[in-house]
Length: 506
Image 1: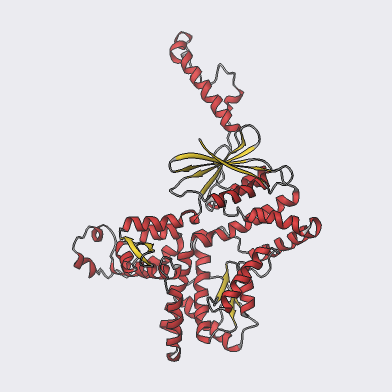
Image 2 (image 1 turned 180 degrees about the vertical axis):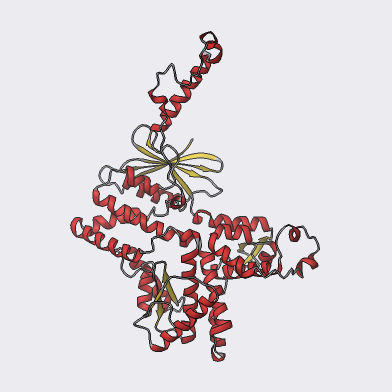
């Protein structure tokens, strides 16, 4: 029995295999969109990966550069892409023609784990499930613009936007739109503003003393001034502010809107990399070891699975951390090793053998899969015992011994460092605070310093791209060693992508 769409380019053996793996996945309770598998060779796989999984995208040199890097990595034996799947409904997954049959089974099981995650994780709930069509439409529109305005001109503008595509607010799709309600105080005479009701005239000077009314008028003036400020509050979605306020030509506005939509589509993947890969790895391991593996395939599967989970010194492998943390959660909730009673137990031997036989593990990991992103996943469920078992400590490279060494085993510090690297996808917090800075139409940005100094080189390039779109001077306020600093980029009148970059302490 087949639950999904048929894949016309699969061999009869692979079609039968797909139905088998899909049945196992649904039997375990996975709930996924219909999934279409397509067979491609390694060149096509590298090309699709360079395009972010979408075979039809607008032309740009960045995709060619990514393809060249992936191709060289494959040719030199440094990397190999076994599969690729995109978050659409129906979902499309690509299988490498050169894969062994055991790899094809593993990949199919892995894909169904991903698609279950796409469909049910909260952070993917606002994404465009028809993005394949949207990407194709974007490609056609951008190619038409290139024909009309010239390839170099359109590609240059795309360069500027791609340089700042991370300056969005991933939480914006989940916020309720604010209702603008203007106070009626603007229509009142200045003498009546803030005045408390009083039906007895002889009590007026006590109920509404002059200093009180002066204070109320000042508050109103400050509020009116704030209302006129653009934006009224710091805005994290820099792309949206530029879209609504920059002096763009119609075609530039169109391109910026399209690339912003694509940036929001990819944002949840960065927010859930550890969870997503861990969930898919958990299920491909479960399906293969308990259902789908033949005796003759065990060694090959173990070899390739171990390679996927291998961790290099100084790096975090999302597959390894994700699958192990899901397994740890399942084990703890099966044994009841959580809650106040467990946390307050001081007997290490008793905690090690703790087993209330609750059997809630499977239910719990499905719940976690539904509501968490990487930050909440690690913050809520990573324990000192787990970190010790995974040997997750703070490491530093020792030049004398020429190897990485442990510099700190403290759980709180190690966890904090990991969470810090995942918060805001590891990017600095940048906000728009004023679209008319210095009353000259300059753009003022603010870097919310969270212990991360800005890299001057990348700051310059980012501000150059923003200034090219804004067409005027851009100022960025930040901190350096506890002292406030302002970076300024003033575009040249002759060419907006060129200009003068400066910095000063304030």
